[in-house]
Structure formats: structure tokens, C-alpha cells
Length: 220
Image (cartoon, rainbow, N blue to C red; front, side):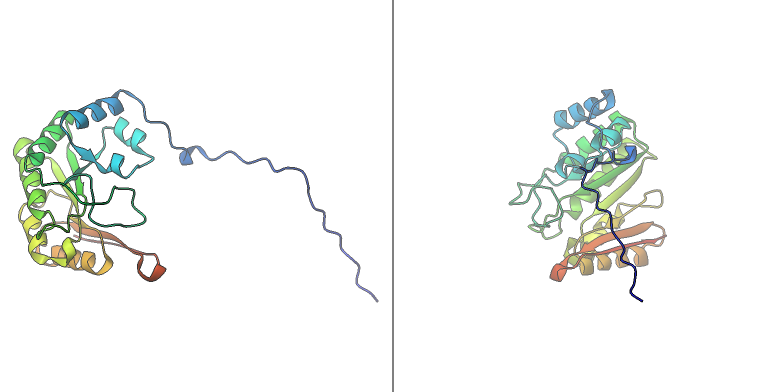
């Protein structure tokens, strides 16, 4: 007995795209707080990773007076394909930048400041000195303000990590080490192992050999 043939109906009508969920839509940057923060950053000649990395959530975050200040200029010495921060030869270090960041934190009335930077592989300490300076400047200007620093991997330099750790204490929520997989984990292990009173965590990406690997961890 032969099997009964089954007909498959093919719908040739044009597909109507379904609307994207509201949570997936990035709103155009606007609002009083957004423009106030943008003017403040321009006035103080400060960079934010929000702008440099072209974050689509900048409007929402800035309207809530939330921003991540980016130290050491806006030119990165590394060419990570997944990052929109400009790459090239960076300019000289601006040692007045920590004072201006602290002023911005005070002006915004922040209780928790988040600081990151471009990679500065052109410097022996990777810019660790400026991280230490900005931590001290914020704590001196706004006592009690939490400071979270998203540090580079400093190419695995323990001395650079120690420079940052010396300026950090219990009420800070960092450092978070980021960068090349091996050296970032090395920096995080040092931060977690040598200074138990400081909370630390890591978030690194490894795209070597065409593979994409993410690792996240936290130590308290």
C-alpha cells in the first residue's frame, strides 16, 4: 500500500515585520539632564565612554545623571575590533584631568562615580598614576562618594595594579579589570588576593584565533 502524499502549503504573501519590543528600542538622546551633562563634559574638556564607544543607551543613562568618565584622552593604543573608541597615537597625559573629573562628580551630586580609560600601552604604568590621582581627587572633594574604577589590564603589570589599589579602600566597588584575557585575569587575581578589604571583579573578552570568549567573575 503506497503512502499517502502530503501537500505542504507555501505562503507567498509578503511577510509583515513584527514590531520590536519596547525594551529593545533606543530612544534618541534628549532631555534636560542629558543636555546638562553634555554641556558639563564639554566645558570641563572631559571624555565619557558613553560617547566615545557610541553607546546606544546614552540618552537613557544621561537622563538619569549616570555616566562613565574616561581618562587618559579619547585615543586608544589598541585596535580591538569590537570597540568603537577611536584608535591611534594618543596625545600627552593631562595631569589636571583628575581635578576636573572630581569637579564634575561634585557638580552632578553623584554618590557613586564610575571611572574607566582608554588603553595607554605607550606608558610604562599604563596610566595607573592617573587612576590613583582621580580616586584621591574625588575622595577629597566628595567624602563618602563611592568610586568604581574599570581599569585596563596594564599588560599584566602588578606594580600598576598596586598603584591603583593603594588609592582604593573598602567603600569603593572596584577595580574591575578588563582587556586581554591572560593579563586581565592576572590583574584581577592580584587585586582579589592581595587586598581582601577591597571588592574586585573582572570582565574580559578573548577573541584570539577567531574565537570569542567571555569571562566574568567577582571577589569580595
